[in-house]
Amino acid sequence: MGNKTTTCITGVLALASCSVSYASVEPAGFVEDSSLTLLSRNFYFNRDYRKGGESPTGKAGYAEAWAQAFIARFQSGYTQGTVGFGLDAYAMLALKLDSGDGRSGGRSSFDMLPVDSNGDTASNFSKLGGALKARLFDTEIKVGDVFPTTPVVHFGDSRLLPESFSGWTLENTTLENFSLQGGRLHAMSQPLSSNNRDGFETFYAGPVDSPWLGYFGGDYQASDNLNLSLYSSRLKDAWDQYYAGVSYQYPISEQLSVFSGFNYYKAKDQGQQLLGSFDNDIWSARVGFSYGAHTLALSHQRNQGDNDFDYLRQSDSIYLDNSIQYSDFNSPKERSWMLRYDLDMASYGVPGLTFMTRYGRGSDADYSDANAVYMRRDAEGNPLTGQKRWERDIEAKYVVQSGTFKDLSLRMRQATTRATAFESDLDEVRLIVEYPLTLL
Image (cartoon, rainbow, N blue to C red; front, side):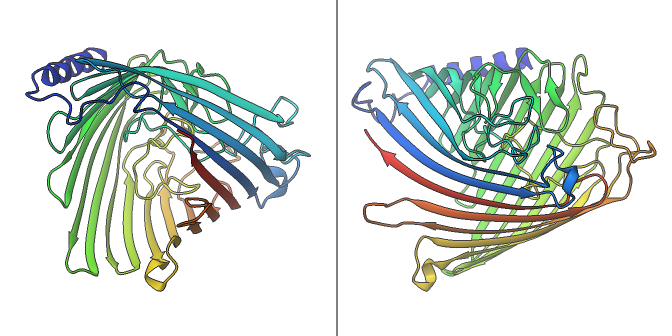
């Protein structure tokens, strides 16, 4: 990936330097184009494991936390000239309001507050970071603490504080309707960590002693209705991942439109095979329609490989339709279906209020041919086969539309999952209140 990435980036820079025009809008300046925002996030999370002593802490049969976060972000403009320079910085603080007495969630995917060896949660934790940036024509480069957003590397923001990465990223928008992204990252910071230089960690295999992660790809808006994406990444000595995506939407009338989408990943072991030997293909396809306030979608997903389709822990680097609140439906040989319904209450006189519900069911998960890293066995030591699961999610969200508290959002998310031996049975409730403020 290293040589390929370097070649592609060289080509992007050459393309930018040959652009016939400067940036579409001349930058006003480092200070003049600066912004400072503050997001207040209040988060209550309850996960009931349904089986008592099988909770990660081995104490309470559930995990529970209530916490408050403040996320400040500064983004400067660019200095004037052919090459403009700037700075992005952030400061984040998380405060525990309530958690403990065996309710911390331990070292599971609960991941709300840092937990010590005794299972006790920290009363607070914080993050500080920043990145230098430069712009040449339509090419932007950032070096430092970054937040990439691609199908193969996408920072996660489903917990109290967002995830971040350390390294450099590049984005080019020279060609109309076409954007290129690339980068090389050497560390990540989980939502629980104050350290910006932690090692890489995946969701299903855990920590990986890999020196770097490189990625490159692009998105093309082929028409008003059709979008195409193509990306690749390499987690050195662990995997090569390739992604292709297509989305299409066609308006039939002012009220009615139809849409479809397809996502495909190929994952192959790489180098020293730190995660074992594997060659996975997984895909999802979706069709649906929107009629006024209503949207209905049906999706199907299949993992054709012998191992779990893995991705970076707590990241959003999995653009599969059936990867939802808790379940990813990505076990070896697993097939899944999902039905989703969305309702926008603006059409009924309540702008800002939305509802969503979805139901997904997976079957045929089979670990017979999984490698040693991803293998799951029953109590007798045999590989798990014929595994099944289902998940139902419900979400209600309201965003204040005007007045002093404009953009204040209140969201309730509830999930219920049931599974055979390879997954947990659980009920989840998440209550999230966010209030964004523009300070500069």
